[in-house]
Amino acid sequence: MQSTRALKDRVFLIIKGLAMGAANKVPGVSGGVVAFVAGFYQEFIYSLQRINKTAFKLLFNGRFRSFYRYINGKFLSLLFLGMIISYFSVSKVLDYLIVNYELYVWSTFFGMIFGSIYYISKDFSAWNRKTITAIVLGAIAGLSISFLDPATENDNLIFVFFCGIISVSGMTLPGFSGSFILIILGNYVLLLVDSVNALYDTMFDIFSGNFEFIHNEARIRMLKVLAMFTLGSFVGLVTFSHILNYILKHYKNITLATIMGFIIGSLGVVWPWKKTIYKTNFEGTLVLDSTGKQIIANYQRYLPEFSTQTYIAIAYIALGILIVLGLEWYGKRTRQQKT
Image 1 (cartoon, rainbow, N blue to C red):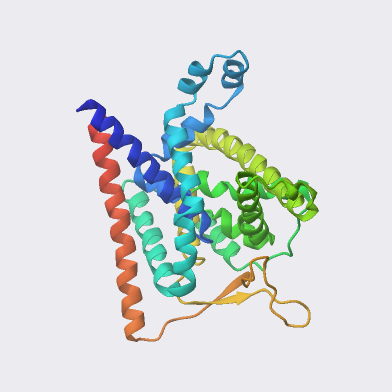
Image 2: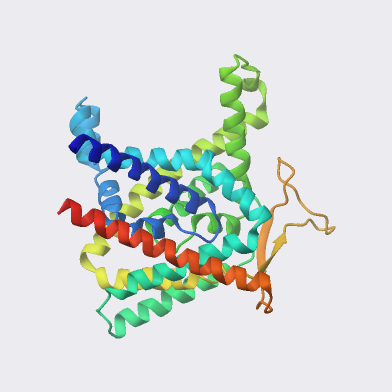
């Protein structure tokens, strides 16, 4: 019975990782919201915060089991396994759905984020001038980001490292979409499409016994970019977790209010009724990525007309809210079982 429950917990952890990974890949959606609503956000931040000087001492002294237990290794490894699987599978399905059913996908995400606002606010009782100000400022910041014009692509390795630090914020700061920030910084395609494709092609070549890629300067450059982005993401993940752990401990109500504001502001990013604006050059010609896809520059939002399509989209918004309520129910049930 106990082993069955342990296996079930492992499977659910991987599923949580799948959900976080898929959310992180979609511009405007934050993986941190999934962690927050599913009830494992604080454990996630606490576990990352354990990657510190003590952890590295244990690692360098060869005390691998102690290191694994100290950083809550089972939790983190299964969660990240789910994210990696998601990156190469679930996120690909999402890419397809966004291309073919864009309105309904955005409607579902809009509903999920709207539902997460209810989830966070329902138990929040520390309403005062400071927390209300924090909510307003967080909402303004989140909304302002959604209307920024994107920069041009930049593969400078120092800038790529900085992109890694910033983009991973979506995992630690609910409502702050790392992938949308990458669009604003101009490097979404470079870091989440081109470099990943380069890694995939390289792995395929290695397993095929073909090592000619080592003479391919463009491929090697892409792998360096991916390595620097990964390093920046790791540094950002650990750094943000330490900062958030501190402010959650000392300024919990203001932090939660700010997070709530970010999530409210992110509704502008995932507003379902919008037209995608694709990147063009000075001559007005569409710019394509290495796979031949059009590159997203930003979105032009509009109010919907009353039609069958609009009613279906509203139904998907309701579905998104129900998904969040389901996650909340599951998270509450899991916490009750642990206690």
